[in-house]
Image 1 (cartoon, rainbow, N blue to C red):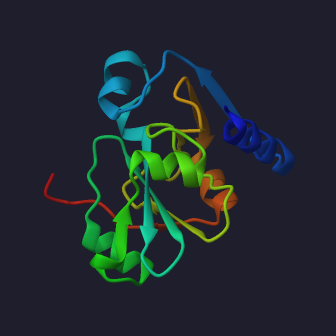
Image 2 (tube, rainbow, N blue to C red):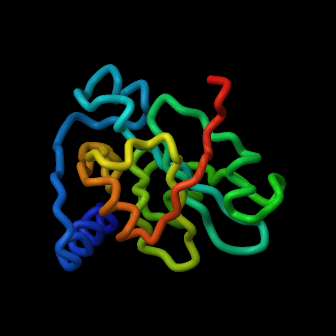
Image 3 (spheres, helix red, strand yellow):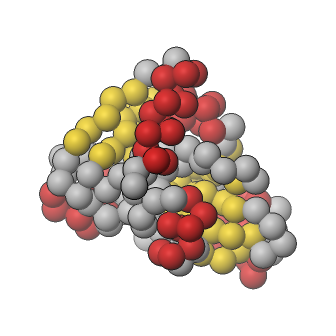
Length: 160
C-alpha cells in the first residue's frame, strides 16, 4: 500500500540526501495539518498534481496557505491555462500511487515536471508529503529542488 513511500525513502538514501521522517496522525489537508500537526505553515509544502492535456504531468509545490495562480503555473510550464487540468483524487492514486494529501514533490514517474513557488524559503528545511498521510518529509529545500530537478518560479496568487 505504501510502495511510493518506500521508493522515495530508498531514492533519498541512495542519493545521500539528508532528511528526517516525522510520524504523526493522518493528515490530508492543510487544515488538518494546521489543527493536528506542529509544522510551521510557511515551511509546509502542499504539492498539487496536474495533467498536461498533450502529455505529461506537473507537480506544483507551494506553501500550505498559498493558492496557485493557474495562469502563472501555465506560463511556468510554457502552456496555455486550458492545457493544464488538476488531477482528481482517483487520478492521483492511479498515476502517482498515493492519496491526495500525501503527494510528494519527488516524482517516481517519467514525464513529470516539478515546480516550486518562489515564495518558499530557499535556505531552510521544508516539510512535505512523502506518499503516506501519516508521514511527513523534512528536507532542505535546495536538496529537494536538486533531487527533483525542479524549477523555482512564481506560482501563487499574490492577492491572497
